[in-house]
Amino acid sequence: MAVGVRTQNLRKVYTAPPPLGAGGGFIARADAKGSKPAKTQIAALDGLSLDIHPGEIFGLLGPNGAGKSTTVGVLTTRVRPTSGQAWIGEHEIWKAQATVKHLIGVVPQRPNLDFSLTAREILTFHAAYFGISGEERKRRSDGLLEKFKLSDRGNQMVRGFSGGMMQRLSIARAMMHNPQVLFLDEPSAGLDPQTRILLWEIIQEYNQDGKTILLTTHNMEEADALCQRLAIIDHGRVIALGTSAELKGSIPGGFLLRLRFAKHAPELAERLRLLAGVREVRPADSNGADVYADRGGSLVPEIANLAGSAGAELSDVHISEPSLENLFLHHTGRSLRD
Image (cartoon, rainbow, N blue to C red; front, side):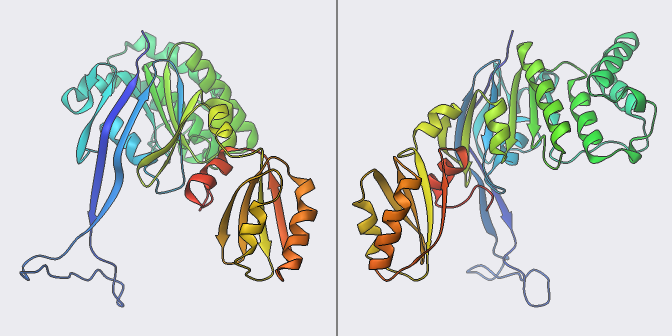
């Protein structure tokens, strides 16, 4: 039976010393009574609620620092939340950690393989932790090494593996005990296109067996290719949730025109809003604007004429159709990669 994942009002607050001083160390500031150093609170998760359906590939999309890895940490028992609840299937994570660990497989953002072992030993030792018999361990390791194109390196130490090979082996290791829920934290970061496509195929095949997969990514192409639903998060909160098509469809108009002008002209934004087909205009910075419209290239001459009459020459324009990147930009006013 497929297993779902759920969170309710998850909050995680980290405490850290105040900003460092001139000497490169941390400066301890006293509180009002002068007895304890003040601490800075950083809210990595701020009331995060998700309901991931059994048997779906669900994506968490957002920039670095958005709270994606912290969410995975909580769901995989590595990070204790400050408040809120989380479940794997019917099991509340912090009340049934041992049971939950048998249900999940985890691939961290950076490979954490034991360099003193061979690829095959890494897989078989992992399976042994879950009480899998010796004969079954061998069968599974052989199958996964073949699936991940590592059969010829199975008896070699992993210290000589490339980054892509280590990532493939990390995912194979997570699959060794056949978990019902697989967590992938930035699975294709830094991989070449060929290896990325191989991983996508394996992830989709694993999902077809009824397994639930949660992956974090800031790769829009990956989210489009793999995820049946996704949540865009920023500052520990969900800012959009749905299928890729639903989220793209929520962007005003069919095109985004990112404009740059030679000089600032405050009245120009209001003039742009009056152009036929323009749905929304947002100042991007002192000399720029984002225009959401029903048309793209045909608007450029009109925009250039308006800019010229306002004394703000159009210096650059970039036109794109609806995308997850544009959606993030529309909700936050900044690029997904910022």
